[in-house]
Image 1 (cartoon, rainbow, N blue to C red):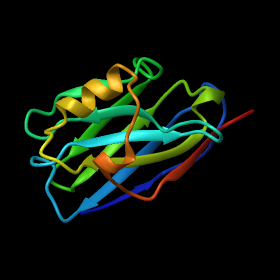
Image 2 (tube, rainbow, N blue to C red):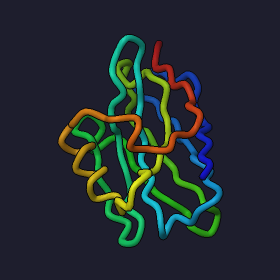
Image 3 (cartoon, rainbow, N blue to C red):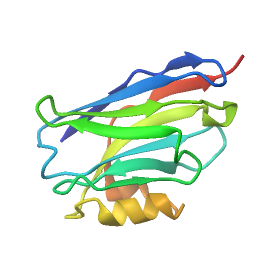
Image 4 (tube, rainbow, N blue to C red):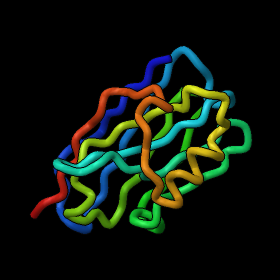
Length: 134
């Protein structure tokens, strides 16, 4: 299982960025993918996720309406389109997949309810830095 996030960079408040997560070693119809972020001095938090078989989508309250998660199963890619960026979106963003048999529903509940993220429950990719600043 390998995941690689890319697409981070510097954006102005109100601007947009699109992050990509390339996955290998598994297919997206079998594994759910989540986006998470960690700002300096803060705990890691869930941002969005898409379940494996049914493609159910969940967002955290802090990004709902501004971020959009999508996937291209033919390319084994998952994307996070981030619009109307705010300085508080500044963080290292990671994509991850559950280590257990969770199809994404449990991860989605964790993210949408703002519950603590336990790193050991997921396989993580390398992060990509997003900085929102004028």
